[in-house]
Image (tube, rainbow, N blue to C red):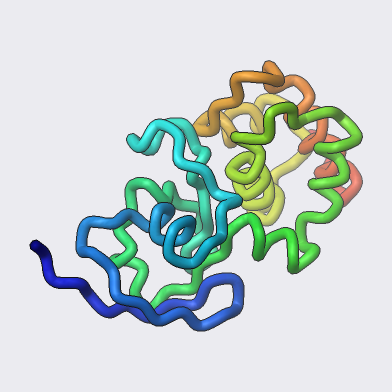
Length: 161
């Protein structure tokens, strides 16, 4: 049996201290020990994007990062992004454009799209497609997702070049 590790991190603005197994990944810790179930576990290999979260401002695959590696970090999940209102326009565009169906990929897709927009991403459809290419969606065919991101980029004053 492995000895638990003490970690301390900030999740969505709240300080969290916990004992974790050295082998538990960050997304499982967030879902099962903290109870924030918005981030999903999909492939468990880092290729589908369902587990996407932010660590210290950058998106990461929560299934590939151990909870112990998050000690001392600032983590934002889809719940924190939604509560902050920073992606309200993006969320509204996803709804208006029917860019979500089953919803499994949506949290990771929203976090990825938010990073795209915050990093200066424009309404260029090819750039949007490339940026979100690490997030799988089996329901929408991506067209509506690209439409929603393109709409928000345009609304934020970042037209296609």
